[in-house]
Image 1 (tube, rainbow, N blue to C red):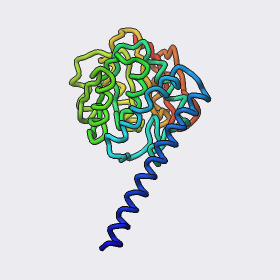
Image 2 (cartoon, helix red, strand yellow):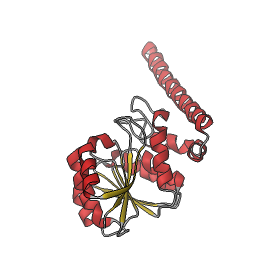
Image 3 (cartoon, rainbow, N blue to C red):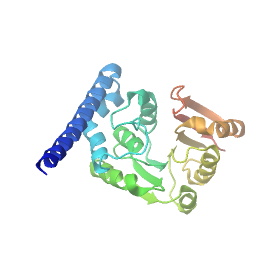
Image 4 (tube, rainbow, N blue to C red):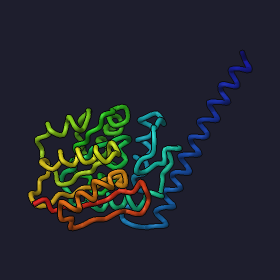
Length: 239
């Protein structure tokens, strides 16, 4: 029994030490990224890195997959996604309201709120295991500016009465689903002339993006980089 007791203690100590090492490595990675790029976004991220770790603590170091900021193999900052992170950051600086479809651990909202702490966000996700606790953290740090709607986007979007300046589509990464969500956000756009949106993992909706280019005049079209999991910003003339 005594041997088992010490083995359990050693196991706990080992995993605790491992978590500390991963966090310290990630902190160093954020700091190194800031030194490498030294942009407005990297500077602000470096100042707010404690929130990045709070999001992980709130979900008990449990994650399903990668996101804007992590690979999903562990919870360490992923600077391979720096360009797509910065694209999102830059495009919401002067925006008043955002509708986000797909929350997960809240990393994209964290990026947007660092860019614009007074941004109003309405967020939809079918799973609240991650979204709900992470939104609690973000609301604590950023003026309670996030409204969370739990459920299927295809059911919730038609019920929304509010209008938005910007859209971030990052839920079910399938061409037909993105098309359905896009059709449902059109009536929610506050600008009668232009709709601005970022599609994450845009290659999953490459066919639909061709439809958009064919049907509408796209006045600004930015793909963050040539990675398969990159994001794509579009400013679309809708009238």
